[in-house]
Image 1 (spheres, chains in turn orange, yellow, blue, brown):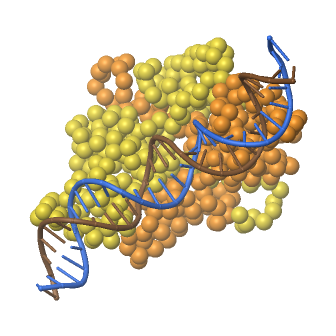
Image 2: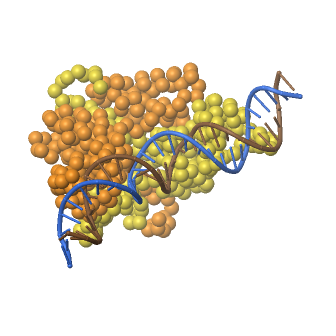
Image 3: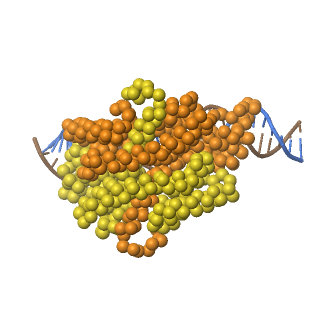
Length: 220
Length: 220
DNA sequence: CCAACTCGATACTGTCACTATCCAGTACTG
DNA sequence: CAGTACTGGATAGTGACAGTATCGAGTTGG
């Protein structure tokens, strides 16, 4: 398959395919001459995965590269899952502090609550995990907005998150020992979030509409 | 409060405050002279909200403006909730088609399944909802990757999403009739997603670690 | 009075994800 | 075997986005 065919079957412009190669997301084709290379089904599949991770998963090119690197490096199933889990970017950058002192205090309080939540959920994650840090930051910001995120309230959400994670891992593990494990695991671990978000938004829309006085039940 | 003070207490650079004003995210201060204006506590609060929506919620400046406009326009609680729900951007842009014919087919199949899911969940949303469209697109992409998203599997996630949405609305409704309703509703509706995602990632990390052979239980 | 600050407008910067152009080197076509 | 279309690789350019910097004219506290 020549690059133009690869482009046609995937719908990805030739220039973009070249770009993905330069960025290390896509392996080079098998060169048949100085200015000619042959692409195969694996390139088609990889392009689909790249598209799904970037558009659906919202990953940047750099994050996608890291995730795909974990896929390609995959040796054991467990280490692959772990690598992917850490290659996925954590939302929530740091928010700059205004007031030095009060900030440190709020941060410490949030950190303590996160630790307590993790203990209550019996989650075995290192305190250095980026996810722990992200949650701490998020909690601090939410509380600054006077949102009532007490521990017991958070815990309810945490239970639901746990249920989702369990479902995900069941699905990812179902591919154990299969050669397609890594790719399927990436799909499950990286795209389950956006999918859940879409479902949540739909459920949210339903809830909001149910509260509204019945008006135009089918107009946007 | 002068702009420099506003900047100091919120940690947002003066240039950025001016930028947010130009973009219509922040109301102007009360002008006391041709080149002087007075800012108040509401500006501090609004800046915090902007920061939370953009960094935590991941909203663009334009999306933030739309959401905040819905907040400011708020008349009844229900209409406010509805406006916010629709002002929030739906992830998942459209993916370009490769193969004309097969695409249309896959799209139709996904759309039918989404409709069936919505019926099964008794969700009352118009078929024109951007969330419905987003979910359809997502489902089509996932299936193209050979991910096994049959209806019954989706339904399990949908039930969890419903539970989350119910929790959210309960919290948003708790502010009914309060003057702070709109702001609190925005926080709940827009930031519950990122928070849940963080919790999910944490739960996912725990699940992955539990599957791993016990090694360095506290190293990143 | 004057240094320090303000407003508002405009211009600039850096990042990101592509997209376009160029070049020398094939590969079918008649 | 000339001509055209296509190729891989390198480099440069584009447009959107989110700020950041500079400027001129006006104001104010010491």
